[in-house]
Image (cartoon, rainbow, N blue to C red; front, side):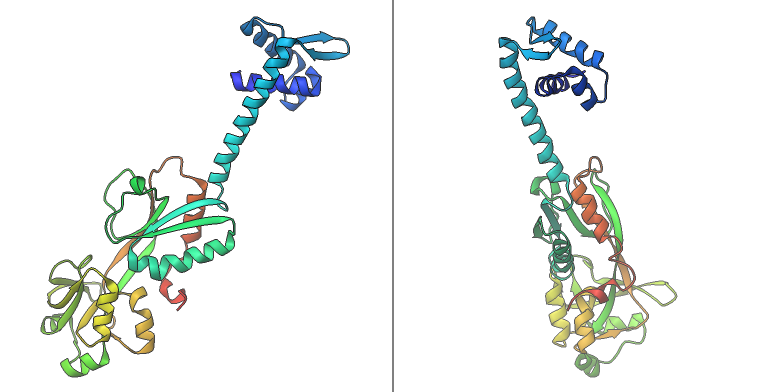
Length: 303
């Protein structure tokens, strides 16, 4: 038996005044408790309890030991309560990371919904487009798009982030509407450099055949809002995620180009610092996110 458990048993013997009652609390036998107290006295080379037919009483050394043991047991219980609080999915602080556009448009409304379900939870949202070291930044869980590099991180696949080609009606009226992927070479294009980093787009046909098209970028930016703004301003044909384009498509500010075609979709993962001993609050949040990225998931986002 470890020393802390022996201290807990000693405290309960003193407080209940009975070896048998303490034994019931620890789901053991009276002889086991008696033997444990005797072993503690032998280790300390001091009598802690006076035993008689009316029960037990503390010796002078026992009274001093009892006060210290009681403090140790109380501190141990408080330490475990702190950990339980941190592990609770409904309480404590949850640090969530994401890229800027996905964070603002997707993670924020989901996090707010989760917070409404768990009013005692605190959430710290951190949005950056550059790679974030989860351990160094203290991030509990991050939502990442695209293929994951091999690493020691834990990860759960949440769904897919599909892309489309879009342009404003005025641009298409002025420059013509592409009928096949090869026609894109004759158009000004708007490129999100963090994903389409070069001047070649890989377009998937309705038959899921991949066609590589070399394009001329009129604008290249690492900010999706800038790419969308350029498309709305008649600057060219943009490659955009559906969740970014959805509102502008609904209002008619932009329209889908090469309908039925698409760009390769990105995987959406929840990643966390280690696959081992994952905090319950992280698992609970990931469980909340799973199922939120089914087909056409962006249509359920608040406007």
